[in-house]
Image (cartoon, rainbow, N blue to C red):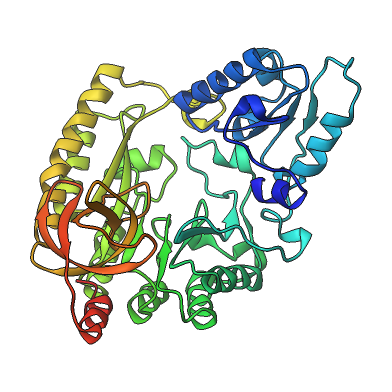
Length: 438
């Protein structure tokens, strides 16, 4: 939306009091996010000047619609997720209406046939920093009982491969060093286009089209959908990072069935073994929900054993959040909040020494680090094992240029972060470490 507004002649300001158009991109996924969105809107509505308009955009707008107006008096417009690419026209409609009109305007069509602004033709892609996200699909057709994404986003809609490759090529040509492919389910990419197992082909096409690209990261692979072909391409293409995020959500088949998730736990053991055999330095991230309705002590204990057995590099955990309108909202036997919290603490306590051990195994090794910032004599960056704003960081003594890769010798390890020093080496050695990852 920001990019489209920029192209239309609007300029962003840092101070809301100086803006003529106020837009809040809301989240409606879980209760705390909804509360934060409403609070931000109320604060802006309360201080809004007569010449300003306030627009609520995004997920909460899509699912609440008129209810959001009831929660936030003073809203001038509501635009949802399906046609956010109409933001410029919508802003101009809201600004151009009669000031005597009290009712807000709505732009909440039911479905979207394209992802983002693809339908508007090629536009210059906005670049901020050395890393960039490339959305390859939007929406989801999976039946997960706890998830409101299909209600918010609609079914899965994939971008044509040529559009994704063209954007990746342009970003790489403009100096982006790391591309992160995202979708609610990247492994379902191309299904709606009649393509089968299309993600590996897309990865290869990007690598071929943008050979100067250093890192290509893959996020959000669906359990049961990681194919042998995908593993083969990840292992064979040096640009594709040995990193995968597979949100497993639980480790007990009965809980997974209640979640309407793939319940073949044996598949997880087999597939992770194949991934690690093909890429011994692979970093695996996953997430789990604890306290799902009906979760027994035995089922939670099975989840803990699952985590202890598989020794994931990165684990995120969430206590179950009741979401109206989802199938899980009608399930019996809710888990008390105090039990949810206790299980969350137990699971994260179990994972911490595993994460620490993984990081300690890197001490003494040299890794390429993408520098993100510096100050006070220290530099902060990430290895291939760390997705931005999700995983850990490397704290480096001294200064290094942001946006560049530097070889760093790991000198210390914590549960989530590393420390190190820049190691000046012949370029051939740096390339060797890049190829081997560690």
